[in-house]
Structures are given as structure tokens and as C-alpha cells.
Length: 226
Image (cartoon, rainbow, N blue to C red; front, side):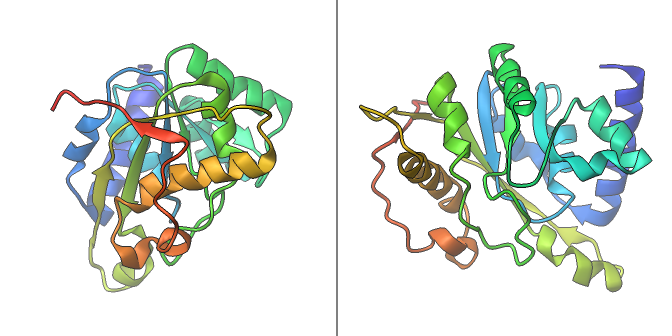
């Protein structure tokens, strides 16, 4: 880890500890090494930095909206963390190649399948492109949820720290279906991946996936040592 990254991570940890109340020990359930696809819910601007600094020493690379490179402070963060810039809702060839490179080098590729923030904290429908990486590279997927960030705007006005809950699910493999993989199939696979996220959350936050079928045709939990 470079000196600049150490300084930035120290500052971010200080900010997070000031604003939030949490126990990051659940993240110890994430394997120390990849390659692995880490999927998470997306509620605020905080969960990305939170997961990055508290998943260390795991080497994690995340997708981030290109606008973050417009501000000098967030640009330094993104460049230091080697984040991959993307235009909202779409991946260009350069970004795709960078994602594949992360996995081929044995690191964690972090994705928020919803694509955009859910300010009320409820899961939105995942984007079909999420399944592309796991289907092509055949790397395991691990679901991680952070809950509570949606209450930050209300709590900060009252000068209260916001409690955050972190849950880590069982890693699973994505099973490629026979035949040609259409966009509809990719969406079905993505929805099944999202159910793994939803099942870590209370029903009140499962949103689009609260009533979704739990027929796991495309995913299979990995055996754990516990």
C-alpha cells in the first residue's frame, strides 16, 4: 500500500467513525484472496469508501461513476483506489477490459447491480450486465449488504451518529445455462444473484425482490469450512 493510499484510508476511516456507528467484523467472512465478484446494495455515497477501507488488505477494485473524477478530492480517491470509471447505465469496451483484468489478476471486482442509488434503502431491480462477468469468467460471487446509510441525512441534522449493519452471505457459483445466453437469460441470472442479496435483508428492504421466486436454477452455494 502506498503512502498516499494509507493517508487517504486513514482520513476516510476517521470520517466514517465520526459519522457512523458500526462493527466491521462481519467483513472478515470475505475471503482474503480472489478472484471473486463482490455484489452489494447501493444506498449512498458512503458504502463504496466504507467497503474499500474496511475490506483491506483484500485487493478490491470497484466501478464508479465518471462524474467522481470531476472533483479534485474524489478524483484523488478514485485514482488512488484504481476505481474503474463508467458512464451511468453503460460499460464501454475499455471499462469491460479493466474489469476482466481485475478478475484475471486474482482480485475482487466490486459491483452494485442496481446501478443507481436507492435512497429509501430498498433494493431496486439489478441490471442484466451484472451476470456477464460471472458467466464469462466463472468466478465465485459473494453478496455483501450494508444497511442504515439511508438514515444518514435525518440523523446528521440531529447531530446523531447513524448505526450501520453489515451482513455477508455465503459465496456462490453461477452455473452457465446450456445454449445461447440471451439478454433475458442474463437478467434471470442477475435477478437470482440479487435474491442472494435480498435474503440478507429484512423483508421491508428487499424491495423489488421481496416477492421474487426463490428457485435457484443458475446459482449454487459454495461449501464453507464452518
